[in-house]
Image 1 (cartoon, rainbow, N blue to C red):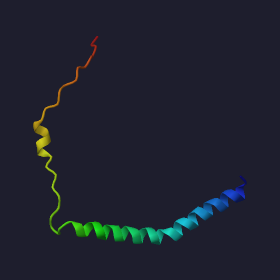
Image 2 (image 1 turned 45 degrees about the horizontal axis):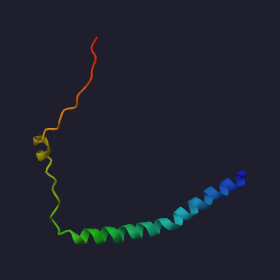
Image 3 (image 1 turned 60 degrees about the vertical axis):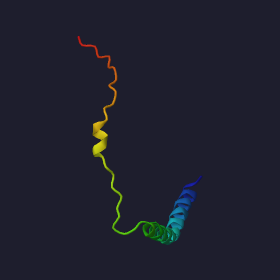
Image 4 (image 1 turned 30 degrees about the vertical axis):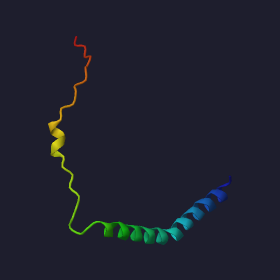
Length: 67
């Protein structure tokens, strides 16, 4: 592949990216709008992480050699 072909390939990729960027933004807005309407307003999901501390995990046997 010559240098000119590499430059054309990179320029073509950048051109395709720039042309498809508005389409990507439009799809993202539509998807976010569709997802946000499914959840009732003011009802954020809460994850309780305090319950994880009450469970003790089994300790692994460590084979440490002290000299």
